Image (cartoon, rainbow, N blue to C red; front, side):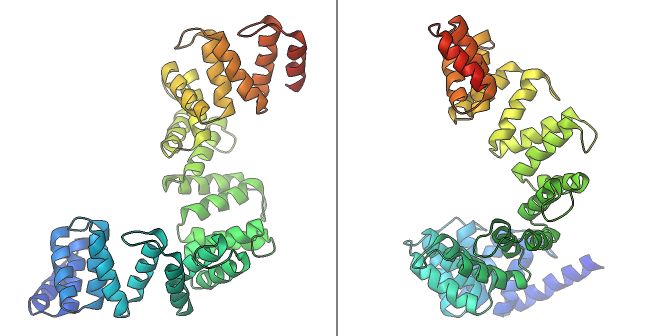
Length: 377
């Protein structure tokens, strides 16, 4: 029944669009864009948005700019999307004004002008446009444009948008209450705001809510609920949640131990660039945990992390050089890596550094320094 209705709606929009009704042209374009009542066809969507825009449809002008910005049925064209956003904005379209403000703030398709962006955000915020209120809050939080850093003013605008049910504003305001930025620290309020945002599926809020349950912040500790929240956030590609899920599967404290799932989630988090997950993924490959042992892959992961200054990886890489695993033995290089990691407080590296000084491995023997590093460890 619903499919029949969508086909009928498409046919009616097509007839009215052919009769040059601009609003019908917009709806027809949306049908083509979304595949509603017809096969999805981005080229046709662009064609009808263009007809609507040229037919003085204000919303059509905005959508045509959107097509040019996001390559919908046409190539990206900075001059064109600014032109059509500007036309729609001049004709009073608030969404176009917001997009134009973002372009000014980022210098996208137009010369960067944070002050102009701020003016747009302020005007729109006073008209209760929630996305603008969030951006205005960000301007005050970070000192964008002519605004000075004023976190209390940022919270004011986050709160306005949060009361209108905006999940990002709820999350931002929750952060303010959690960290005491612009408002007095109140973890219970932070918890409630994260909860509201999480109920709308916002992945960062889901993660923070999981963190609250995990650590008992503003609520009794509930590791099982934390695990479930991390799992939802992880499936939405939150990389820290993915890493935490890997830890929980590896430890088997909250859920049944499953090294294959631990490896899977470490790998997912690694693909998102999360350093700690890369280290644990390297450990999986090194020891064959949840995956076939592959010391070459482990070496490469530790090497990449060591170059980024990650001390645990520097220590592991030192062991590879010391023992000649996947590379020629190089005790001097091992010593150098142990020293770098040890000076950052890596206790295993401090112990190995002491051993290196005691036996003169990769460096001159120095018993005094050996004792020093053994004591540090």
